[in-house]
Every structure is written in structure tokens, then in C-alpha cells.
Image (tube, rainbow, N blue to C red):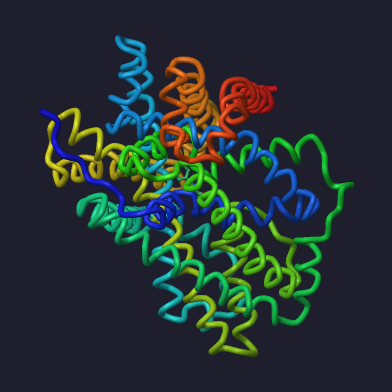
Length: 453
Ligand code: PHE
């Protein structure tokens, strides 16, 4: 007999949970930089266009697979593709988030450590010169980042263990609004700094001369990563969405809040970077090298404000990373409880051990294991590029093929329009189906070719 499953409360709960997965480090350390590099408002236009014609349809394809199955990823794929192929693709969807979590939680651990450093006023007490280079030393340390990673993972698992409603929904319902408040406060602070005008110009001035072929690839890749596509998360979360809910509205609301947060993050970070006379970069160095330097620099003249900004900022990064990693754990937790009959607590403990060990190896690749290389990459870089270039892309492709070509049209229609009851969705259905069947597979292949060539 089927065990009764939990459900998310209402529309807001669903969007908060999805947004929790979508809003993460990608919005904070990559989007603002891409925006500036690729012509500001021009990049936003391209990003929105890609999100509408590619990412959102992929999101909907995954959502439909999840809600129609009311089951974990492995089973959801298995319903559509029986036999061995279904097992393999289903397991791919379960393994991908575990793989991502292994290195994502290492960065989560860094954010935890930097938050604690901010609380101890370390960035304000040191001079900018003393701060420079600290990040490199920190990640190379043989055990401190490992402990932080394990602590971060423990908090993540601690949220998931309480279940979908009592854990994830409850957590996202307060953490997402809190994140928005934090980022707005930091943006207000950043925009009032002397010399911030140049940063604003960098962010929004539509400069079509900066738009190159690479802009399109960047926009597409960012939109994929930011919406957590191809990872089994949307399938899993959607399996907990009530039948009366509007999947299109939930997906659209998620994409909108994700984009809005990314733009706010741009206004929180870039003006401050310019005000300190620095050129913005991307990735961990922007967050953990450049920003502490800026807080220390600003702390020389306004220590209290700068200390508060540093604490709020690293709290935001920590929280953003946490809401994403919670979603990564849930895929495995749902799978282990439903397919392997494990209790949620044991499933979470097992995931903690697997990601704890794999993440420790990734973390040590900045220090004692720096000589270990896979295909010329450090363990951390290998884990990252395999996930974004192969696993997530493959997961997305499988999802659109399943929803567009394998799933009966009637099921796709039923899920997207609630049996025709949602009039607007019903009108949009032919266009949505066309996007899922034809446009998204081509878009994914273009993305693959652009990374291979
Ligand atoms: N979307 C998250 C971010 O922007 C990253 C992520 C990718 C989370 C894939 C889960 C799965 O940081």
C-alpha cells in the first residue's frame, strides 16, 4: 500500500521552497559579474528571453514529471521509462544533487566561517593589507574548512530531517523573506557609498557593444544553474505540490524571484566594489577575498556601519547557500525513504556521511590534496565542472524528452492546466508543449556544443 505523502501548504510555500533552491551562490557571486561584463541591461534582456523560452519550459517539464508521479525521482522516471534505462536515468537524477552537495557544502562551510569572522569583527579590526591573501590561507588549512563544511552539512541535514512541511517549508518561509530584507539593506548601504555611481553604471547601462556570442552562452548557463535545472530537485519538490496548484504560476514566480534577487545582489555588491576602487571579478574570490578587503577598507572611516554590513552580508551568503543545499539533500532523502524503506532520520544520516566524506576530499584539494588531479583538474574543480557541464545538462535533456515525447499529451495537459480548469494555461498549452518538445532539446544541445567546442 502506498504510504501517505506530505504536501507543501499553498502557492507561497511552493514558491518559497523553489526559490530557496534557486537563490544561492550563483545569484551572488556570478550573476552581478556577468551582468556587468555583458552589457548590463542588455544582458538582463537576453537572460529573461532564455529563461522564458528555455529554462522555464524545462522547469515545467520537471515539475510535470514530479507532480504526475507523486513519487521520488527514481520512481518518477521509472513510471515513464520502465526497465533498465529508466533505472539508470532515475538514478542519475538522484546522484546529481548528492554530487553537487558534496562541493556546494564546502563553499557553504566557507560562508559559515566568514560569517563567524564578521561577527567577531575580524574584517574591521584588521587593515586591508592584513586581509589580503587570508582566503588562500584559510582554504588551504588542513582542517578548519573541513570542520566548517561538516558543520554546514549538519545544519542542512538538520532542516531536512524534520520533513517537507515541518522542515523545508517552515525553514524557507522565513529564510527567503529574510534574505530579501538582508540584500535590500546591504544594497541601500552600498548605493550610498562614495563613488558607487560607477558601479550602478556598470550594472545597468545597456551596452550592446559588449554583447558577444559568449553573452548568450553565459546567460543560458547561468539561467540553468540558477534555476537548479536537471538536478532532480524540481521533480522531487513538485511531487509534493497539491493537484489544485498552478504549476505555471509556481514556476514563473520562482523564476521571477530568482532574477529579482540576482539583480538586488548586483546592487548590493558591485557599487561597493567600485567605491573601493576595485574591478569586480567572479567566483569565490569576489565573496571571500574582495569583500572582506572592502569591509576593512570602509571600516577605517566608518567602523560600525561597515561591521554591521559585513555581518549582514555573510549572514545572507550563508542563508542563501543553506536554502539551496537543503533542496539538494531532499532529493536523496525522498529516494531513500520511498525506494529503500529507510526512516528519514537514517536517510539524512547516510547522506551526511556520503557528502561529508566526498566534500572533505574536495575541501582538502585546496590544501593537502592539491596534487591530486582528475583530467587535469583539482577534485573541487572536477566536481564542479562535471556537475554543471555534464550532469545537469543530461538531467535537463532527459526531463524534456520524457515530458515532451514519452509522457502522453493528455497527462502533460492535465498537469499544466489542471485538467483544463486553468484557462490561461490551457491557451498557452500548445506553445508550452512546442517549447518543451522542440525548442528546449535544441537549446540544451547548443549549450553542450558551446562547452565542448
Ligand atoms: N541554484 C543554486 C544557485 O544559484 C545552485 C544549485 C544548483 C542548487 C543546482 C541546487 C542545484 O546557487
